[in-house]
Structure formats: structure tokens, C-alpha cells
Length: 204
Image: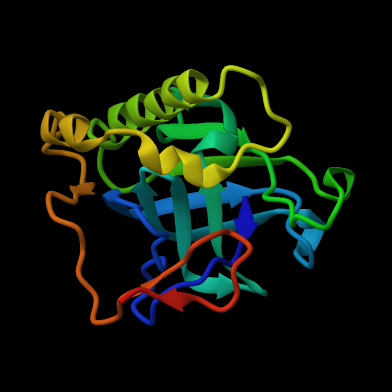
């Protein structure tokens, strides 16, 4: 994960090179733990989820303290589960490993638990796409990397083919998720090259 990733003024995450956004979902509640500076380390916020071939990014409608967005690389997510409780709304829970700066030790960073609650409308489009995408990313990464690696580059996920998956995605009429049949256009051509790169670099 990466706390407060770089965003455009409209709130959309600044894409990485070769990143393809798959969908956007408004009206979700997001919970995550072990956030520095938050009360008890936990944050709960309303906002938007962006899903791409590299990551899932939650962007809060309003900042909660110093928290305004949370970036979860798909290769770092594990133990994800779709929950359908009887008396509460459907949700996805899971854990995500931290993106550790190259010159720092992994032991200094904690694994985060997260939950995405679908409080406005259904989730019949979002959930299958998310689960299929994360499974494809893992399969492709295992084919490329035969040996387990302690620090997988989260941007390797960009090589996973997603076009076919998007074209054949089931669209639930009760789910307000919007699938990007064309990549969202912005006036800026800024792209990020790595999770560590500061500032954002433009591509000609």
C-alpha cells in the first residue's frame, strides 16, 4: 500500500506508465487500520474506488485528518474475501502489504487490513471484475517469476492482459460501477514511473 498517492485536481489517481483503469465505483465506505496519526490507527471514510491493472485506489470525498487516499497494489493484496452478511451491506475485506521504500527495512512497515463496503447499490459488476483481475494478475506474475521474490515490483501487474476481461464483464443494472471502455482523458500527460518517483514525470 501507499498512503495518499498522487492525484489530479479532479481526484483521479495520476496513472503509472502502462496503467489501464478498469472501473470506478462511487458511494463506498472504506475502512483501513494502522494509519499513522489517526485515532486508534483506524480510518473510516466515504469516497470512490478506482481499479486498474496495477492497483486499487480509494479516494476520500473529504479528507479524514491527513488521510485522503489509499493505494493498494494488486500484487500486494491477499486474503481478499467477498462478504454477504445478513444484517449489513455486502463488502470486500482483505489485507495489503506496504510498499517499502528501497532504502528502508520491511520490519518498519505494517500489513494493513481493509474493508470496502457497498452501501449504495449492488456490487454484481465490481466484485467479479475485482476477483477475476486479481486472480489474473497473480497467475501472470507466477508465470513470469518462477522463483518467489521477497519484494515484487508492483508495476509488473501492468503486463497482465485485461482487455478481454473488460469486454466480457457482466454489467449488473443495480451496480453503479462504471467500466472504462476507453481510458479517461486528462489534459495532463503526466505519468508515474515507479512508486518511489517524486515528482511526477511527464511523457512526451
